[in-house]
Image (cartoon, rainbow, N blue to C red; front, side, top):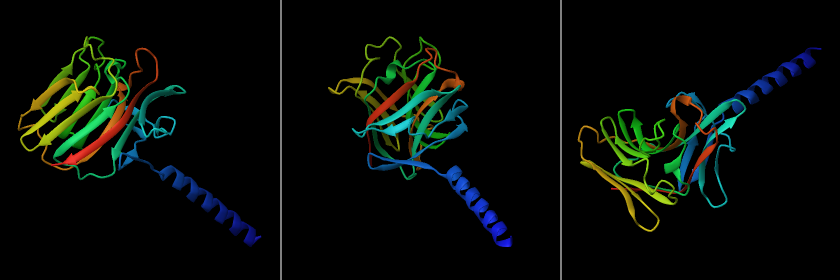
Length: 233
């Protein structure tokens, strides 16, 4: 009787340990030579639910990274990936996006950025900020400098294979967006010394919902990234 009781207790403890390990498991991806942590849980920006499911975030057979906004059951899920390394600093950051992110639903934000904390960020954000007639692309160097880059009626709103980049140096942050043929569709040089970060941090990409509001069109959405690179100064 005692041996059977001991076996039952040990089996139960092993089961709890396995459940704990599953609950504590983190999701990681290797893409463009970097290791990325895939976010899950709830939280800001937007008070969103974040999914690390391979149905929501994945790398396809062509090595393109997919981040999505998806409704699962009754819940809309956002997605985010962050570099596990946090030693990024001055240099040139480039993302090539295969999908047309300048025409997303007004409640969706597609973001590519450097982040140390909320007061030290460099952001590229494709969004209309909840308003259908708002500009479609914005740049910011936290905490102060901001620039609208692509207007709501831009002829480039359906562009694909756009390279979004910024060159970050101690005295400026220079943002550009280029079509695959080299045409520059936006260009801004931030020289506001109160907004230029001087600390190391990580890189992240997000697809999220404004204030966790469902897309106005009620449809899932995705951002497909075909490349990322960082060349330190």
